[in-house]
Length: 131
Image 1 (cartoon, helix red, strand yellow):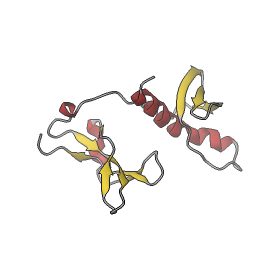
Image 2: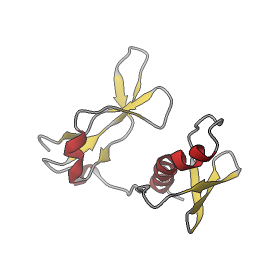
Image 3: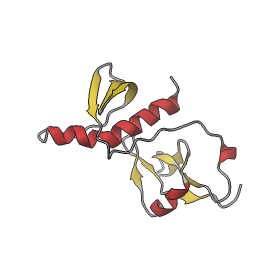
């Protein structure tokens, strides 16, 4: 299974995890990473990287997104991109990949997101200024 698909599944699971934790207020939120096994009604079954399977209650108002493979050539001038990055020993952020956002990302251009990896960050979406 491709890495992009797994990342898409992770993103979808993260978006829908709030519904699961709302049912168990005493539980500590956690990130769910893995592959989608099935979607039946409002229940998403995810096979986590650790080997166990979890059920995520996905309400109709929850948005689900997926990632698809792209090349650097797909980032045209004016396209909004974000770069997940890790800090190196000198404290400099080093990009680990590039995410091409839909046109609506312009609305998010002043935000910084905590990435999936611990101690990594996703820079705010910014337009490509030159090829």
